[in-house]
Image (tube, rainbow over all chains, first blue to last red; front, side, top):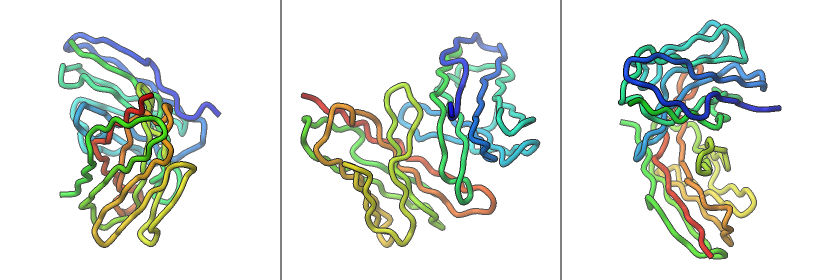
Length: 113
Length: 114
């Protein structure tokens, strides 16, 4: 099993550009989520999904869109990148009771100029 | 407000020494508490999980304790190794409907040196 994979590993964008961060998991987990990690702050939940066709907002959803057309994939779209979105983004999939056991991908480091 | 606070922010110890990391939380209703290890440039990996009724849980050289009354947890690392250099994140799970709500601490950055 590859677990949770993310692409790209690094990305530089200009303000106003759009892009999609890819996330895939091969563990057949129903739950998937996106977090951002900023210096001096704990991971913060952006969006999550409890199954194909179901998505919901987390703590910091503004400026991001998600969709879940398959169990395996959960892409995160930045509609119009802003410097405040410079961060490290982690995708995770969840198992166990209430999906509280989460498996994280390797992360995408995004810089918005 | 649900919060998880960790101390110290950073720690440097010599290889072979022991250390203890602290986690205080105000999350309620509490479901469980996990400690994650995050190597530089990697995603967090779960080390231990503790539920309300558990006081101590070990995973090799890592031992986590939980005092649900005082809402404190600690992670003790015995006979540290260079490979223990990482950030250690305390994560508390809030008991909600379908999906647990996780509150993450900011982590303790541990550096083990020769």
